[in-house]
Length: 103
Image 1: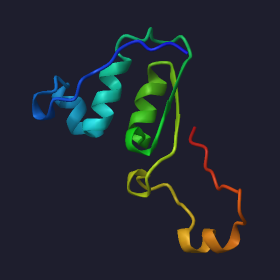
Image 2 (image 1 turned 180 degrees about the horizontal axis):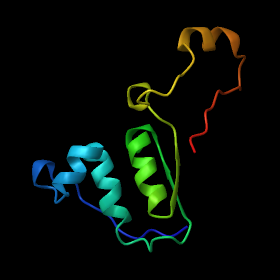
Image 3 (image 1 turned 90 degrees about the vertical axis):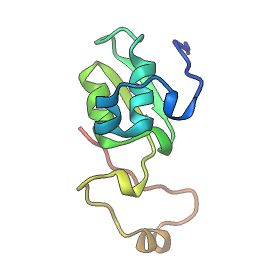
Image 4 (image 1 turned 45 degrees about the vertical axis):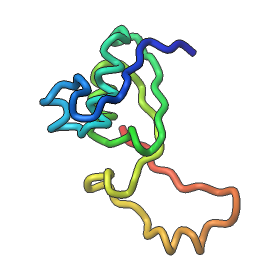
């Protein structure tokens, strides 16, 4: 694993692309800024927790040749149909998970 870059969060003065903030949110714009130094179209892999994952960001990174994998919050799935969480909790036993793959 190789770390390319880092950003110290400075609130509203953190240097982020305004267009990226509008389209992908602050967290997405942060990921894009950090991935700017990653060579494009080299099949690099990026893993993130639910705070830094969205469908729009995943599409953007994939277009740059960066494979993105991460958990996602239910409010960031756009129109992707997901199972009812209460129903899933009842039907799944311990140590099981439910997943969807976006292509």
